[in-house]
Image 1 (cartoon, rainbow, N blue to C red):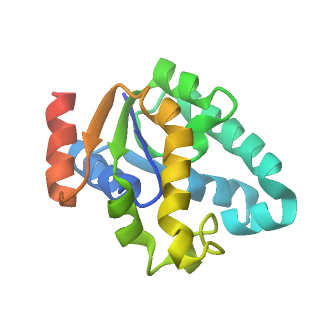
Image 2 (image 1 turned 120 degrees about the vertical axis):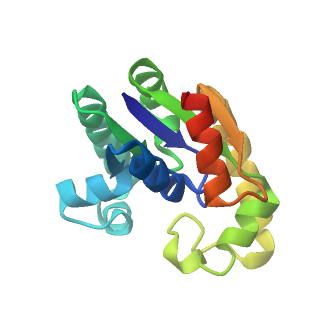
Length: 170
């Protein structure tokens, strides 16, 4: 069994994946961390030094590598991963997917004070951040909404969302 968490940055993918992995007793893989290990470089540095196209190629390569493994796992994807190179189709064919849906105000509140840690928004002015998030969510929604399950994470704790996920898994 492979379980994949999809959603925009700050939707809680890594935190929920960690809890679900713990509850089910199966390995946790964060795709960005996996890429960093394989490339021996931080995602932000890969973007900076080799560009987004290189990063997206590697992201697809490593996602397929993980999905092709026989071993069960809980996998957390970066926010853009489902939107490129047929990645969402690969996820749908090989895993049970969960879209952790967060609204613009929720995402904004979660990232406004940690923008510097998030390369995608680090250069976005505070007063333009909500519009930036909204535009990205609109562009990515088509891919995210293909997930087998969608769970709203607004005003929910990690424990509550984990409980929702485990209930849907049966």
